[in-house]
Image (tube, rainbow, N blue to C red):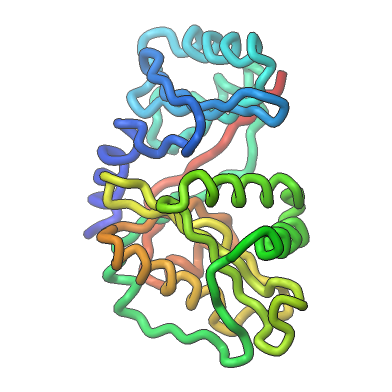
Amino acid sequence: MTPEELLDVFHRRIRLPDADAIPGWKQEHDGLVHRSYVEGAEGAGFVETPRGLGDDPDAVIAQEVAFFRERGLPFEWKTYAYDEPADLGERLVRAGFTQEEPETLILGEVDRILERPSALPSKVRLREADGPDDFHRIGVLTDTLWNSGLERIVERLAGEARMFPDRLSVFLVEDALKGPDGPAVSAAWIRFHPGTGFASLWGGGTLPEWRRQGIYSALLAHRARLAKERGYEFLRVDASEDSRPILQKLGLYGVTVTTPYEWTP
């Protein structure tokens, strides 16, 4: 499939029906807005508008700000480069949002990934995360690499794995000599989106001293095989500039740019 065909399938199967909603969050369609949120001390929200914003975009934006302000929740408005209106990002900034770093939406066919050879270095071991200790090690790794917050990632992954075990698989790579006594060398996870044909890839961070040894590629292939076994056709990644060229080299396509805009009460 061409990049344009892949983006069309993604838009119809994922964005329009709001199939990409976050497991365990409240999901609502409010006119043109697809809204997901969870309330509480660690609550937050997520908004998309795949059909555009109609004749009065600023009124729709103000409506969402009022909704989350009333609940005291921060939220992210995720935009795609082809979203309407074309100046949506500028309107969000004027409404008090902060623009975050753009990412590239990467899409591809599972079979194409599996055509390419990949091998894990013999000095490491890849296995599925099993229990609190493994999630803690993954949290330490991601916090070291991206300053993402140790408790935040541990609670999110462990909670999601507990509540939705059929929709999430988490993997870590460890030094074969040190095993569970050493730090996680790399970690990645895959989320399955039933009824869409898409599985999404997350994580993939590797300690600097272990890079350029094929670990990232092996983790990608491992998750692609799992997706194939479960009947999924397509893979999706929201990729940083570090990951984008690697994923494209491995057979996936950059199809558009996404930019998150954050609003905090």
